Image (tube, rainbow, N blue to C red; front, side, top):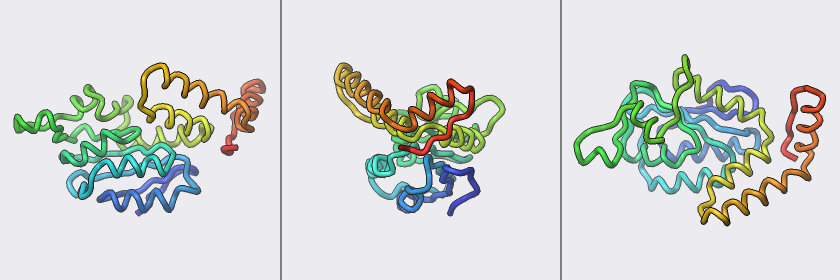
Length: 196
């Protein structure tokens, strides 16, 4: 179910990976970033979380998870771990695999500390943090955002990764968005990017 969002932002609630896949597929043409709002008390991670990684790759744009109050199952934690960004309620607990053996879940603060979720900016709850971040990303040059995602997701040795990053970055110089951004910067105006 879609929720109200700014232009370029696909925002929706999801109770399982199939709903996420369906919404991302429907919104792939019109969105530049997606915010998936999840209630951990009802979310079912019914299939292999690695399928989520394929969904992210197919969508090709940032996906931000917004995790509500409750306890995130180990399966949901694996999905969060694969996401581009994730913000969580301060009252969320996580059944993180290394702590399950001890019978404990971890707090949102500990999840931030270990890098499972992002820290909510001062004064913002997880939903506002997710939406604000998505709105900022939606204003960025889509080709540059895609290059960053591609560079970050490729796993290789450091030298090959650096070479790939240089290649992706240099490809951006011939785009119209690069010219628009440079012109806007020189004229001290807001740039509008179209992904070309």
